[in-house]
Length: 309
Image (cartoon, rainbow, N blue to C red; front, top):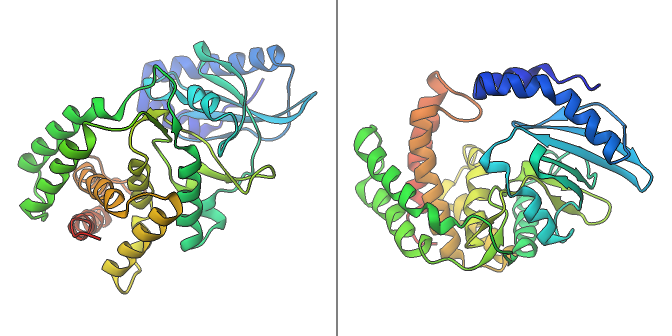
């Protein structure tokens, strides 16, 4: 049986409580059963993300990885996205067990675009990949347009309840994006969480996407996700406005998208992140003086993104 990484176990229990502990107790048996069923043997150390363990494996057809995720609504449509892409810009799906939130996937590199990419290379690679992933969506996937009511309500509540330095027109611009872009979106499959950590090097193609949310909507939404993930790199920029505009233009050109549309989605993401940071902290830090610095920076970034590109 596999040994569940301690950091993964602790994080799962902290986030999910008793249901997480119960699932962890069953996880080694789940993995063993899937290895037998799909005729695989372990081929390396177990690694993990926030919600899943990944077991490198060998089988008669070659190498692969077994991914088993904690059962959560946000993970339901990951295999649907992989199936729709069929290896186009993303790792191949070999097998799936939806009841166990498990997949057997093509093995890609262990590093990420964030680890080995630099500057424009990261933004360009992500844009080109986003363009390839933007295909007609299969039926049954969740639509981003269905979230607009939740987005609008959250923005209004946070703007009233939380202290912040964003001018009124910045929040109003985010609300306008929800109304004008959010409610009428194309029937296009988008990754939903496109950032450098979810882009891996591979032999079959230079870069392949992993960990999709499997959403239907505007491909420019993924541009907003990518730019938000790059925000910390802007902290070191001598010309913040210039760095933001440059990244917007590079991504939009690579993805063949309207830069103004990418900017508006990025601005919405930035406003939401500024409020989320005040309520929950940020991924790299949850409390302390650095949170105050990051929230102030998020406010400033949101304001800059409100300016037309």
